[in-house]
Image 1 (tube, one colour):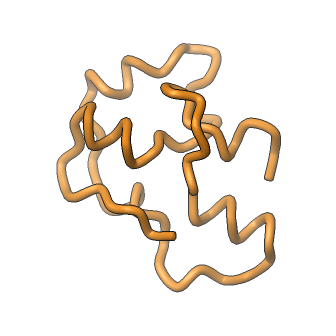
Image 2 (tube, rainbow, N blue to C red):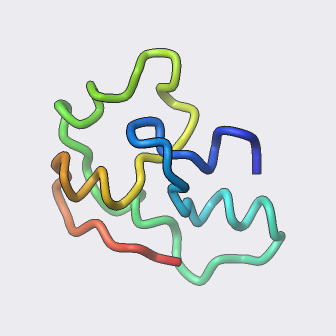
Length: 76
C-alpha cells in the first residue's frame, strides 16, 4: 500500500480499503470496497483536510459517525 492510501484522512487509523488490500496483496477481493456502495454526506467530506482529499478512503468508523447514505460495513 502507498504510505497514505490505507490511512483514513479524518482519524488517521487504518481504513481497510478493499481496493488497497487487493493492490498490496494481489489477492482479488470477494466484494468491492464498502465505500463504493454508499453516498458520503457533504459535511463528512468537508471534514477531510484539503491536502488529503481524493488520496485515501474514509474509514467505516468515521463514515458511521459522520453521515453516509447506505449502510457502511466492514468488508474485510
